[in-house]
Structure formats: C-alpha cells, structure tokens
Image (tube, rainbow, N blue to C red; front, side, top):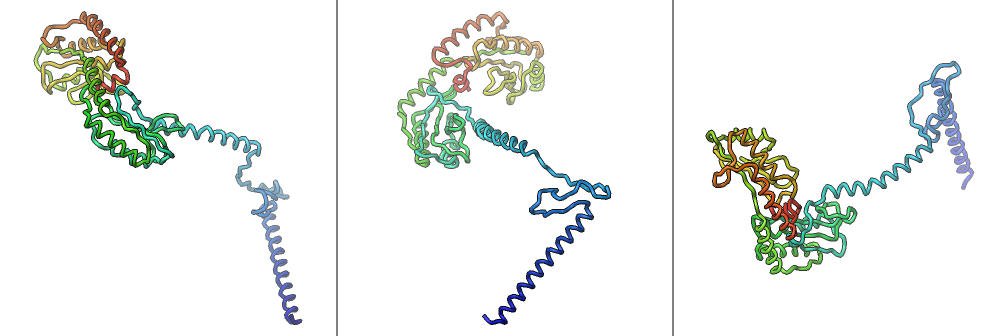
Length: 366
C-alpha cells in the first residue's frame, strides 16, 4: 500500500469520526433544549423506562403535563398471570363440555327398540369424514327414526359429529317399530347395508347383525306396542247448534289450551307429542273430542282427573254435554272406575318393560 493510500484512509477515518462526534453533539444539544421546554429531562425512548428522566416539576414551579400510563404492581401482574393461566386451564374443559352439550344427541340406545350397528376405527378420524359417511343414513328417507352419533372422549358422551372433532367410535341406529308401523326384513337389510358402506368409507370395523332375528324382534315389538295402545276419549255434544272453529278456539284458550295444529289444541307441554288433545272433526261441527293418550302418560299424574276437569270446563263454555261413543251421558263418577282399569294396564306395561310415560313409551307411542 502506498503512502498516498494510507493518507487517504487516515483522512477518511478522521472525517467519519468528526461527523459522528458532530452528530452526538447535535443530539445532546436538542435533548437539552427539549428538557428545558418540557420542564424535565428527555431520555432515550427506546432504551429508557417510560417517563424516565422526567423531573417532577420545573425550577420555575410550572406544572408539567403527565401522560397517562399503566404501571401495574409487578406482584399483582404475576398474580393475575397465574390466575389467568388457572382460569384458562379450567375454561378449556368447560368450553369443550359446553360444545359437546350443544351437540349432544337426545337419542339413547335402547336394545328393545333399536337396530344398532357399531363402527370402530383403528385411528382417530376427523369429524368431516364422519359427517360425509353418515349422509346416506341421515339424509335418506327411512320409515322409522334414524340416529348417527359419535363418542366424544373428552365429554364422555354420545354426540352428533362436529367437523372440527376427531372420533374413533360411532353408532348407527334405526328404530324397529312404533304404534304406526314396523320395519320389514327388507328395510332392515337396506339399513344394515347402508351402515356398512359408511363403515367402509371410514375404514372402520362393523359387525353385521342377524337381520332375520331383528325382523322377528320388530314384529314382536309391534304386537307389544299394540297391546297397550289405549286412548281415553270424551265427546262434547252441543246443546244449541253447531260451533265454528273460532268459537271452539276461544273456549280452548279460555281453559288454558294452546293451538297444536289445525283444529287441534293441547295443554302446554315441554317436549314430545301432547298426551291430551282437543280436536274438531271439521271447521263447523256440533261435536268435539278430548282424548288422553294412556301409554304416553305417567302413572299417578292425575291425567284422568285433568281430562274430566277440562271436559267440564269446556262443556260450560260451549253449552255442551259429555257423552260416550253411543251418545250416553258420562259423569265424573266414572273417573274412579277408569283409574282402576288404568292401574292394571300400567302394571302390565311395567311387567313388559315399558314404563308408562317414560322415554321408551314416548318413542313407541308417537
């Protein structure tokens, strides 16, 4: 390297050092001026703590502007962080349980009523795959109610599949009979075949049931259902001409009944079909009926007294008398005799494994 090059490098280094020193001097000068104008020192905004270098007041006594800032107690922050972590730990299972509760199926497996196929996957499968596989089961037209549920291991309950979940076990079920119809062997075979196709789509194991045995069970269930399919009805006959729908609707509202469907009213009920119904055969008629669905009514609920009580109230409002199917008058003394007969019927239902008014009875008598 020549002497000229060395000299140039020295000059360049001196110039850079001079520029650096000049910049620092300018910076300190500006900071001092800002401190005098604001009544306190101004530190480095990147390196200093918020508000560091500020004096409490200027030498002249002029109050300075204090910017709002959050400066929590470090111990309080640590406690809040710990509490937040604990709350999050508790909230995670609670949120999962709440989500599962929202998807929870009202269907409960009943070996007397249902044909059930279990689908078992060797590894967890996402919920979208379960939903897609179940579509032919849930979207097809079936003569009886169909259910498809998956086991939520976190919530420990059967739920409808969620597209964000992962599951290994599922149940596909169809009810065999109710008071209106019974599945045939061909219909059971079609359902089993559809469920097995869903299992293939999920790469799941599925043990095929004995279709002939299920069909025989369906026919036996149908006979058992018909044995207890009893209704008690009261007929109200007009003593002063025909009634219009509006007249009967007004009387029904007056005794606490609510519209159920066209020309039908019922007392308020929580879920499931109404067990006591007022019905008109036509929009203009001189006879209406009050009917009690016996097997769907809980024993000891006082339903017979309610039936006759509503009949008497309705008769007073419509100027009608209560008669039987042969148009013979019925009085409230018949209540005791009817209740004695119902007690025997309820006993027989329990012996056959059907609790009057219970979940099984509600599913059978719809």
